[in-house]
Image (tube, rainbow, N blue to C red; front, side, top):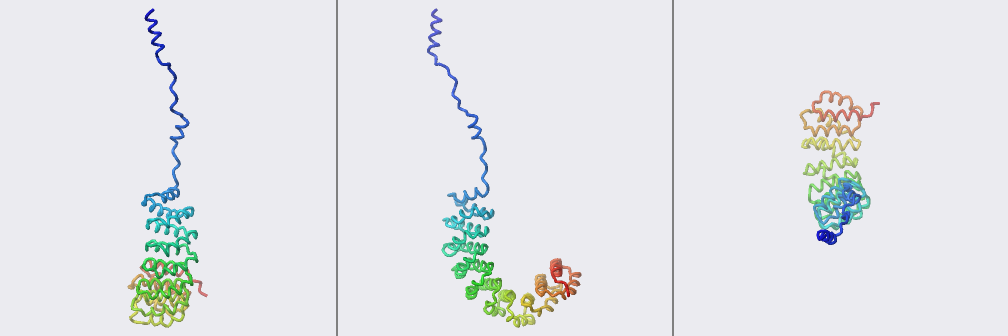
Amino acid sequence: MKKMTLVVLMLAAAPVWSAPKAVHNPQKAQKKMRPQAPQSPLQKAMNDLKSPDVALRRQAAEDLGTLRDAHATPALVVALSDEDAVVRSSASRALGLMRTPDGVKELTRVLSTDPDAQVRQSAAVALGFIGDPQSVGPLTATLKDAEMGPRFAACQALAIMKSPAAVPALKEALNDPSPQYKRTVIQALGDIGDVSAAPAVRPYIDDKDAQLQAAAIHSLGKMKDTASASDLKKMLKKKTSSPELKMASAQALALQGNPAGRSAALEVLQDGTMDRRVRLQAVRALAAMKDPSLAGPLKKLAEKEQDASVKNAVQSFLESLPPAR
């Protein structure tokens, strides 16, 4: 009896058992375990562009330039004001690669106000790619930038845009003491092709710098400046003229509609000992003449030609010739 009473008392004192509360919800667990969809390269780069980590922002700006997705334009425009110059420069290049006019306003601001020369240079390159006429004014102003990099970039951008409105500023830029910069300016004037610039370029035909001479001759050909024909003919006959300058003169004359360099170009082309670059230049000079009567002698030359580059150039020229009448 005592034993039974003891058992009853022990049972009464024991805590009442109950099923443990569920701590695992299969549906919730499944949602937590489900992998998140990976970010697209565009989303990742745009998010990284806001990162406090400057290295991530730099890489993001580069990546957005590679992606060339116009959806990134607003983010890149904001990045033009980033505290880091590399980010600003990369953002400028990215906007240029996208060729979106939406970035022009901010790029022109950067071009004229950014304290870093590399950033201003990148902005000039970008504006050249975009080609918006509104940027011609800011680019011509940059021709007077204190640093050479932005000046070169602005000059090349104006050449790409081929805007006659840039001619007066480019002519003034010929006063720069740097021969390299002068050469770039002369090439830009040739690419624009406005013959009103020819009087400013002609004096360089006789410059002591052979590279300036070549740039001037090519540009006068592109401008179709027939007033320079007599000087170019003299260059063909000058014994001290290099073969390069002679062939440049022959090509310039051909672009002006003058075949005076025909015999000189054929002579160079037939000389297998002449440097390949000069012989290719001779082919370009002859090609600019578009003369069907050249087909006969050039076919014979192509049959004997040993240099593959020259042979291919001659054959391409022959294929482009109009049929003889």
